[in-house]
Length: 259
Ligand SMILES: Nc1ncnc2c1ncn2[C@@H]1O[C@H](COP(=O)(O)OP(=O)(O)OP(=O)(O)O)[C@@H](O)[C@H]1O
Ligand SMILES: [Mg+2]
Image 1: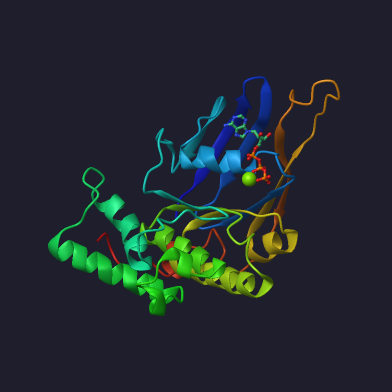
Image 2: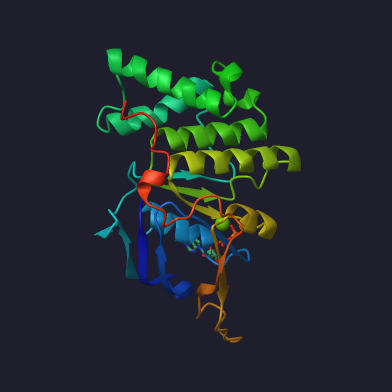
């Protein structure tokens, strides 16, 4: 659980202003859904939170401290189409997240630590319904299974903030419903702060404790690149499963320690 504060954030690429004047406080443990027209800067905003993109102006604080200028294990991300390693099995793909986290220099775990990591990875994969697929290769999985693998991999690193960029966009309605339910379950259980970008308004309200709409408020017809999008609506979502401000003792604590 982490509080994210965004203060006076602007992002431009050259002359093109993508985001402007974004001021937000995201409460620990909330599930914030972001919607907005294609190209309005939602993914850019997530990349800034992830630390792979720097704001042009303003700053982002994670629990009161400036965001480190590179992605770290405190932030996990799942994209619409996740790029798992095609030559690694499901279990090895899941283990990779743990290995990178545990040993950032060497990227491998050895001995007892590796055994414990395998057990944790296998347990998480079972949790997302992939118990029967540990030895499968990613191309042998359906789209829904690949997204569940991606979710498992991101959650195994126990990020303080989980960033989801249209994670269910490519799924059929059935798998999408299942993946949404799974996300809600894991979010409630772990209390992770989740930021979810989606194009689906009902999904945003169903899953979000809060829904943010990104849009441009200023337009210059002669220079469309001059103004960027900002938060135009900040609405309560229908997800009342867990109040973001509830005392920590009322929530389930994250399971397991570091590998
Ligand atoms: N690295 C980059 N260099 C230059 N322009 C960029 C870069 N990344 C994004 N942009 C521009 O920033 C704008 C916002 O892009 P972004 O991908 O954040 O939009 P989005 O809201 O995620 O759109 P979508 O809903 O289609 O995914 C676009 O006009 C895009 O062309
Ligand atoms: Mg995008």
